Every structure is written in structure tokens, then in C-alpha cells.
Length: 143
Image (tube, rainbow, N blue to C red):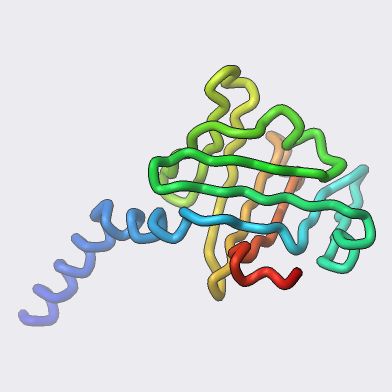
């Protein structure tokens, strides 16, 4: 009977917003891209940290506590061209970057944290990877 009570408390906690809220608390801060994948013409391309340095590519996303973001990108991807700042929102394991001037520029990513790093995944309607990026906290990023 005690096991049933403990199990029901665990299920209640898992369904509560505080579980997903704790993930949201990890998001604020500056995140610097160190590796990414894109799917081009039926081929998955992987660019690693060394490639980004050689190509002078970078992506920095800063999220603040008031659910505002700032994005600074020098990537050859049209995905980030029209979006520089706005608000962000989280629904389960999806984060949406919201353009205050044009909703067509909004970007929705599936996200996850692993070993303190942020992963962002965006697929098109056919399931093709538009962007799969790995970010470190900008404070931990080597220069």
C-alpha cells in the first residue's frame, strides 16, 4: 500500500508543470554553437567546432529570464536570417523563438539538455533535418 501511495505521488509529480518548469530554468543564459548537422540534397552534413572556426561561422543565442532572446548568427543558413530578437516560449520539449514583427519568421525547435549542453533540432514537414545544433554555455566556451 505504501508503494502504491509513493507511485501515485511520483505520477502526480511527473504530470505537474514543475517538472517541465525545471527544464525551462536551464534555458536562460548565452549559448554558443559548437557543432551542427544539416540535411542537404539527401546528404547529412556535419560541421564540427574546427569547421566553424575555419569557416568563420558562429551562432550565439541569449535567453533572458523575462523570456526574451537575442540571436547573433553568421551561418550560411537561411533559417536564422530573418530573426534577431524577440520572445521565447516553451511547451514540453519544444522551444519557440517568436518574431514580434512577423509570425512567419517564428522558429520552433525540439530541445534537450545533455551534460549541461543544449541541443536544438528543427525538421521540415517531410522530416528532413533543417538544423540540429549543439550549444555550450557561452561562459564555458573556449575562445
